[in-house]
Image (tube, rainbow, N blue to C red):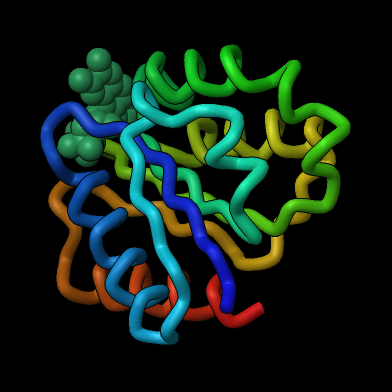
Length: 144
Ligand SMILES: Cc1cc2nc3c(=O)[nH]c(=O)nc-3n(C[C@H](O)[C@H](O)[C@H](O)COP(=O)(O)O)c2cc1C
């Protein structure tokens, strides 16, 4: 049974709504899914998972500071031990978001993670269509 980890941060709840939809989609496959706020997530959470999904708001065209702090904290412990870890990411932005999503990809590239599902970029409060996409993303990631 797949073990999926969702690590995310939010300031005003939009990214949480997306993370919850990913959780719902992944759980519907029977996978074991853990959702952790970035401030609470640890290197062991990554090492114990089969696949990871990162969620961030766009903050100044980058991932949020708390997500960056998460990667800063776990980098040494997971570098070399999680090569090829399947991952994807999603981002909630005001009007942009691509650079924020790209910033997660850049870190994951450095860790040699493997992007297995296309990420999702959404604006503001996620629409029902975005939430549907998030559920599908969770399902796909859990079924790989
Ligand atoms: C400090 C801060 C910086 C932001 N910077 C950007 C930005 O550079 N580009 C953008 O499109 N949206 C930006 N936003 C808007 C948020 O990305 C957007 O409101 C998002 O939906 C918030 O997600 P959340 O509810 O999960 O916190 C910023 C918001 C905050 C609070």
